[in-house]
Length: 385
Image 1 (cartoon, helix red, strand yellow):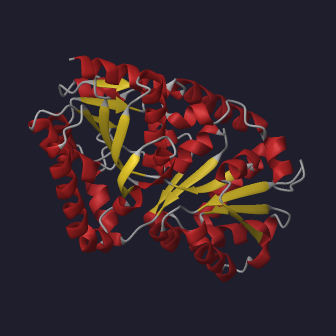
Image 2 (cartoon, helix red, strand yellow; image 1 turned 90 degrees about the horizontal axis):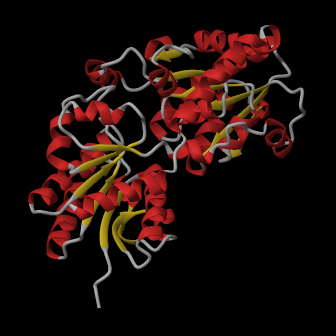
């Protein structure tokens, strides 16, 4: 009997686990008896993936002291994984995001004759342009989640396929605000601000306090303003402490998870730069994007920045459709003023909000594709070469 197709994958963090799960859905549809193994999370495991290590072992971020402390551990995992894959060669290796870990591994496997795919193009169009050469050495093919990326990679001799952004299929084109408000116990005429200071401890450290201070300023003139704060459980206590320090106490409703419900329900959001800003755009919500980090990290990032925008909605729209307040500019007063602009516009100048919603709807259409099927089609072609 013919041996089943065997594909190895590495996904880091919850976002990578979700992306890889979509790939696995497409793989199972085309190859029902497929064997999948490597590094992954619970969504992958639920689809029959065998994790040799859990994906959270790779969850470190940026230029951090934590990254330096854990470098030896991460390199050790990568060495063990490389030896295992070279001893029991898969038909294909797929690195899902996590470029710091995956690109080096992909390069070694490709040099040994194993076909490699990288899913989610590193943000060479925003910063780290030096990674182009590394991608070219590492990946036989790149699966891209933004429509402009394949043409950019082609300029550097890198084969790529646009497969759409998974969030665009997950989020409805017309979110049901009334249902979301009912689920959260809100009235139809409540004025609601969603506060999303991030999902990492470092983001909470730098953003939660100015976000809540801005919200406290807003409530001085809008005492009925509802404040909704979705929080991942491990960070809930830090978020509660930041709200209390800003004098909000019970006025900020801290909710376990449910970020999508909160975004569907809100009138505007004060939000940390990252994937959450794209989610807010897909929910067609006005937003103020902010980010703060350690000054050394900020200096390093600024040197690498290639575009005037940081927030994904602005990058994809190629202009400042929503404000960005970064580092020293992200003061409570500035955050308050920018957020107040959107709240006032919704009541006093609705065409401003309508224009933004139309822009975000067009963006949603551009990102909405059958990701599992398009990815599986691309992988089939790679395996056939």
